[in-house]
Length: 111
Length: 114
Image 1 (cartoon, rainbow over the protein chains, first blue to last red):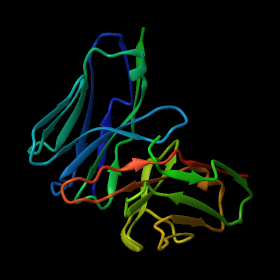
Image 2 (image 1 turned 90 degrees about the vertical axis):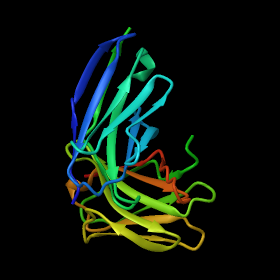
Image 3 (image 1 turned 180 degrees about the vertical axis):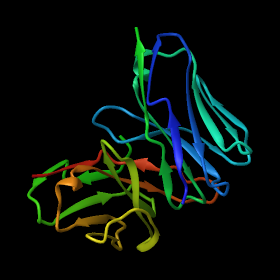
Image 4 (image 1 turned 60 degrees about the vertical axis):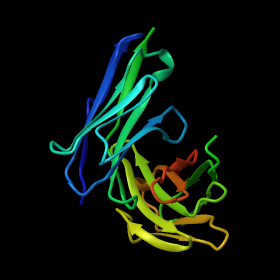
């Protein structure tokens, strides 16, 4: 089955700096890669996603890049704010059946 | 608020017992996914239902079972509970329109097995 690895497990940045979280996947058939933000006591919330036919996608301060050849995808958050502090998960799936999640990155944005 | 509801919010029970977790998907969503989130295992996909039928199975133990009812709500049944089953259980729903299938997660049920 699919195996998704996520790094780093914790990330601390100063407010205004950029943050990058990286994930690798093993199954070349995976074709959909969402990123979720999970705040304390809440369920994961989709923040951005990318499909295998696209190399990059941006939504305001958040962007995701996908390298199909290397089988890795990354989340980029620019101009970080304290409210960006949360746990971020990447995931991979083939045709929206089983979703495989990374182990999570705890992002701390220091004011 | 994602529109997905889960009950109960918290559940405390003893080893060997059986519990049922309930999930109501967003209005119009046909797919329901169940996940287990524990400290050492992260988010683990358990099972997916689509319009009442089982669609995909993940790392779901034989002691666990699920179903999706005609009104599209879903229940996850956990039996012969063990200490290691203590975790957060999330359900997510999606509509599965061709080309898009965003999952919306519920707030979760925290299960504590004593």
